[in-house]
Amino acid sequence: MTHPIGIFDSGIGGTSIFKEIHALLPQEHTIYLADSKNAPYGSKSKDEIIALSIKNTELLLDKNCKLIVVACNTATTNAIQVLRDTYDVPFIGIEPAIKPAALNTQTKTIGILATKGTLSSELFHKTTDLYSNGIKVIEQVGEGIVPLIEDGKVESNEMKALLETYMQPMLEANIDYLVLGCTHYPYLIPLLLEILPKHVKIIDSGLAVAKQTKAILEFHNLLNLSTKTPQNIFFSNGDVTILNAILDDIHDVKSLDF
Ligand code: DGL
Image (cartoon, rainbow, N blue to C red; front, side):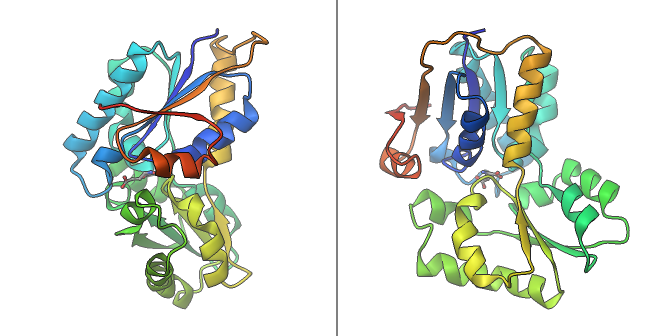
């Protein structure tokens, strides 16, 4: 089916998921919504996150999307059940990769960096309880990180200082896995590699989401089998310069008020 895959996030972070999906499914048309105007979602109430997720979903459905990727841990953990109960298209969500970290840790201690909205959600607690038996999970709210990324300050001194503060209690507790529980955070990996000792492994869920997207498209017979060059379109209600920069200026980015 030639209809596009819809992807949304509170801003530019979900482009880390778009990149994984595009690498795995290069023949698919995609439409990405960066709701930067309303970022960060992480400090909003569950009801507000649900309302924003519905707004984004309806816009993507108006554009004929055949499947929607909620490329935001905060929106997934707070709103995906409502979305699945309300709309007929398949939804793919993203959750912090607690399971592989908990299965592989040698120090029996893992760190998770995510938004307040994700860490306080019921779904996050359910997943953590399921996999973290006998494992110490050090949770850290990444307060302030998303606004800095949305401002294009990924590699700033301010960001480095913030990350050093957030990593300190995890390192004191002897973590050997750091789970990135927000789709904005993969862009911090170069800085985190400077801060963390070599034995600490960083994991995120981007590739898993792309694989799941492919599996669900196959299952519903929705893959695009056309050989025409597909379109990857990005709509932002914020600063398109920053979105363009994070996409290396190679995609079609448009301003849209939504
Ligand atoms: N990318 C969103 C996530 O994965 C960021 C949340 C926010 O806007 O605070 O949680």
